Length: 64
Image (cartoon, rainbow, N blue to C red; front, side, top):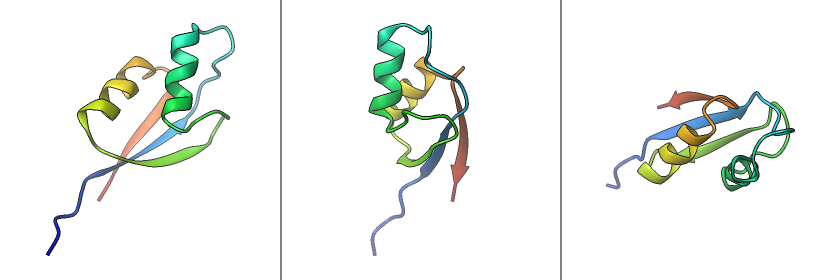
């Protein structure tokens, strides 16, 4: 039986207007490019690093 991977629900709550290009690119990398759009992502160190970079623009929830 396969183990269930932890998931994170990431929702964009801030606008990338006026932000550095790398922050805009990070949002796109997370699959977010419009306000209040959500994505269900695997909880991995790479995703956590991306979220940390734009933590002021996103809301993160644990999904079990």
